[in-house]
Length: 273
Image 1 (cartoon, rainbow, N blue to C red):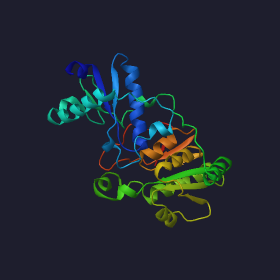
Image 2: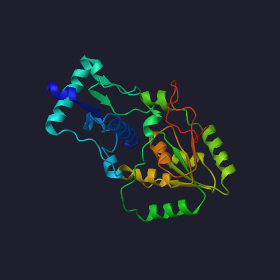
Image 3: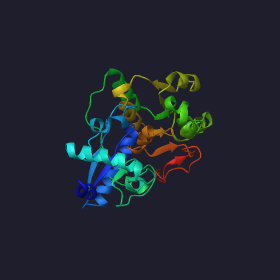
Image 4: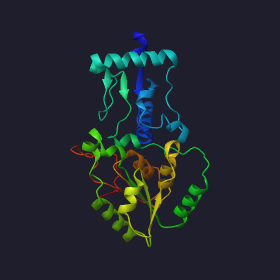
């Protein structure tokens, strides 16, 4: 077992769909940079319990690392326990990869260079009548997506880290910017607190998308990615809607996390406000 442990590296996956995409891109970079190392996936149910499970493989055409079967899962469990006693076994997020680590947190949201891969593609799926209408409007009109994330950002540690960054002033600046770029823009608002959004974004130019919940939440990412411009929140979910889009204008909050320097994930041609 010890010999296996030192010849294999285990990538710990977790979080929501946006985080899982970051993890997958980091895996692609590792696989290309270190072709002689076997990277195995560690997919603990507890790591996805606050979200919709390991959904990236259902939503996108991806090739995730194998979990190594029963032996691989057992070894990854042993490593996760040992890493609490011997921290040097495990690599935390926001650090560059080193071959000395055995258990690697695959979420590395601070390394733009490893995102230079071919864009992943959505798997084919069927849209219901409401989403077909929305997609048609998005493609036909001067569409702008606005993503507002509140939900978990309002409570506990997440409030201190992420809340009060995407302020009303940020969204107003972004909306004004879009009005200077597109003629008669149509704003499609996506949010986990759509009633709050309705109170804030007032006018006939706004349309509110609230029909995709649970396992269908990914459709919001798909719809946003088809807009002519994306106004994103400090959220990996709308980040990827913009990144995977072919749009020419992508607007993001210049401040991303409270008290921490903005991660290096934004291409130069994106607009920070």
